[in-house]
Length: 106
Image (cartoon, rainbow, N blue to C red; front, side, top):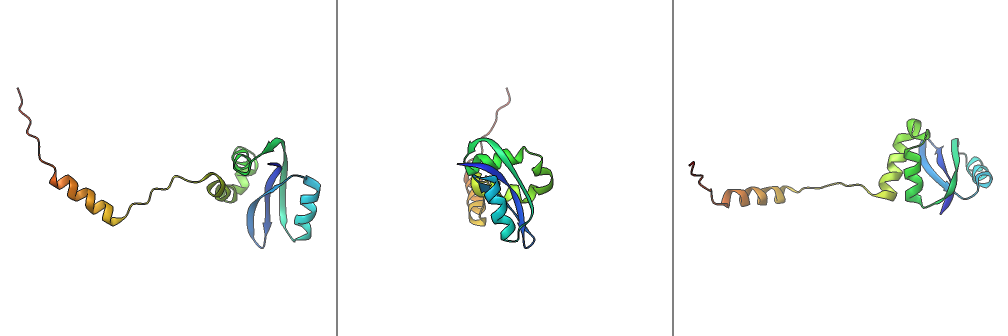
C-alpha cells in the first residue's frame, strides 16, 4: 500500500513511481539523477493498481499519459485478444460445413 504516487524521468524515460514518504522519495530520486519529478500525496494508502487508476484521473495524466498507460497495463492488465491464423481457418471451415437451412415463406 502506498501513500505517494507520481512520475519521474530518468535518462529520457518517464515512469510511474510509488512511495510511502514524499520527502525521502524526492531525495532518493534527485540523488539518482531523476528529472521532472511530480509526486502527489494520496488521501489514503492504495495498492499499485489503485494508485495507477488514481493517476489516470489526475492532472498528471494530461502530460504523462504514455507512462501512466504503461503502468496501467502492467498493474491492471489489458484486455488484448490475440487471434491466430489457424483459429480463423478452423472457424471458416466450421461455417462452411454447417448445413444450410431452407426457409419456407408462408
